Length: 269
Image (cartoon, rainbow, N blue to C red; front, top):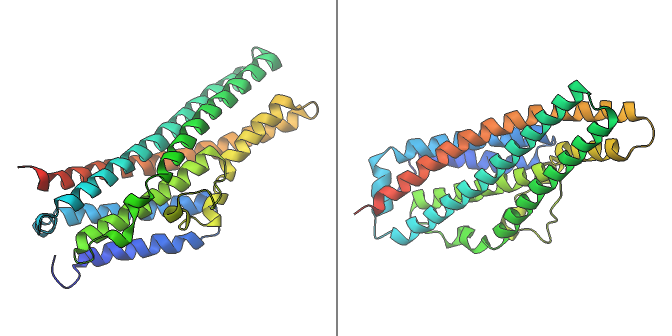
């Protein structure tokens, strides 16, 4: 790359700064939705950058194969985590639709309803288990996301590594949101956890409140009508949030694939 920062490099760095500053946002789901939107802008800018011939020259410059391989490993990691988030949202959405269908029919009365609530809670446990495994796997990847190890003389590689870190940080926050559990900073992946704000952790409340509402309806001995109303309201909130998150993740998934393809080009004989 030229010695002076290229305009698209500068624009990408602006998006990175905005993503980092968004850690200070005060709302929960709104904060993460905004962050996903900014992440989309960032990946669109990176895609435009890859369309320039000078970018391929930068990846080929001075035997950058090892660095490119590191970025390829990172891109695969991002695709894996994005897929887990997408699958978790899809699984939860399908369970919500099935449960809402049972609630509308009400043919089996309270007995059938409790059976469906139990099935819903079981499906949530499956989602949480998959997410917990994914988050545990991320803990062992901190050495692969050490920005200080990046070649500072190569603007493009430095940028791509920063994009990887901030994207993975956002995906981790999203997985925690869907799971509805809080991962303490003391036990979290050291680099990424520093990028997680209290507002991001608070995003978990939407799905966590859904779990609480399901538990309340399952075991409530009094005021069942109130419990069901609370559950219905929470289902509507999570359904709307899920739709927004799915759209954002699908957009990012497509761009992550394009980035991976662009990184593979310099390695083709």
